[in-house]
Length: 240
Image 1 (cartoon, helix red, strand yellow):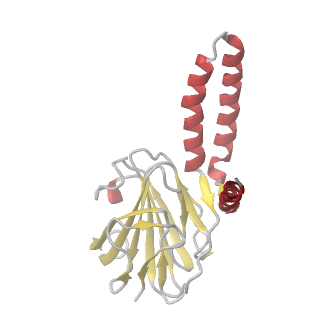
Image 2 (image 1 turned 90 degrees about the vertical axis):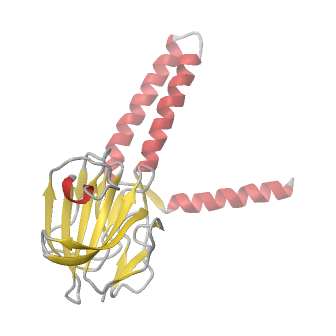
């Protein structure tokens, strides 16, 4: 019996430590509060209005689960990158690597760049981090379509926001936040002419989406296709 008690204490202690490292992103605070009050209010009405608890149980099962999924979506882990930041390109988002290729970038560079793309499913953390230290040169937002985020055409045709960063070594890195088939809002915190650092939030994308990073040729990929990434933790490339 004592072994079971010790095991439960250890398990709960680990979960409490994990919870202390997680917070709710500011983009979801109001939505979570208002929806929680609505669910509670309707649940109370159902509980008092019927002799049977079946309507109450069905409502809680459906909308309680939906609220927990929303809570999971808006979680925002507290993370700090512990490695060497010089020439490091850190994953700007949680997700999965869907593109590692040299491609022509004709909007700004007009030459070939190494593109690394991360697809974010609705179950991933949707906060975005700066992938490099440096200075923000410009921020541009473009309206567009809502193709599935993993499709190649999504990078140019979907609604997206472009953030150009110049590193202390003079390298230019383009970060593109892309809305997916379900995403309907891109939030960008980056401001032109401001210094930016790894560990700082670049923005937030609601629901399924993608982040592309364009790097100078000569950069060395540190990830493989379909590899999972952890935002602000996984090194995806090394600059020349």
